[in-house]
Length: 333
Image (cartoon, rainbow, N blue to C red; front, side, top):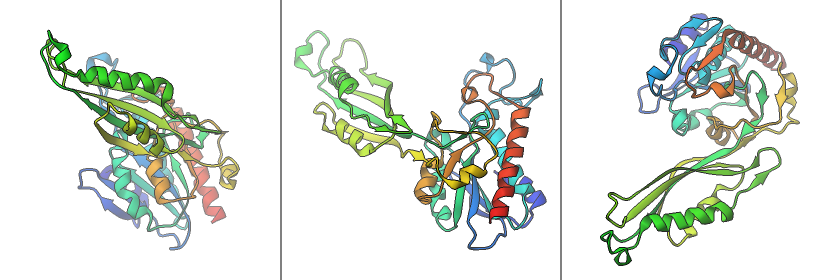
């Protein structure tokens, strides 16, 4: 974040910085000297990455940041350093009277924790549109499904493995619920975001083979398009479930395709949602009714992958696109 702020201030020394760079989940909001009541165009970027994994699985140093054969190589090059660079360039190169802002967040990969902390600051400003420069191959996308991650816990009674009838097997209890979920879980549909989904991501229980397990837990990843309370209520109503812990609760984001601002953007607009979630979930809560698009350099399949890389040409195109979008915003303002 310090690097981004310094680079933006190199050409725009009067940029204001609001935020908390020293907290557990730092964030910063950069704003220029545009008219106080003008609607700003906001670029929202997270600076964190997922872990490297096993370095020996990579063909190159995952943290080297090398450029080879027209590509920037390394973890985070796609998700989302390239988009971050294009956004910083757009802010740094813009006219002083174009109302702009840049939001830098942390811990997006584990539930948009930095963006959550920035919500009060966003509410203090006027914004007319938001660009989230995640990887979309430079195609404009209008939103994404929400995310509801739940840890569900079933409790039983321990007993010796040779006398299972004297205990209550918590794993069996949990498996009964998970089996019902495959056919009974209330998955909503949306005309653009399509159907909610769910995935059993983790399953834990038991200590040793010869003890009836007294506890079992599962972590379920829902990608949602409707009322997430319905899903939470379904799990809570199952008789075998003793505890539910909400790990992530992010609503869906969608901008109507008839939004006039979209016609000014210098890129193809897709009516398909991106498959992943973004900081847009918290930004939408802070800025109700403000159009939000996901639009940036790099191919989505490279996100979180081994040998992550982004084409320099993709980054240069994003920089030109964002510059054009900023020029149009300044002209319209």
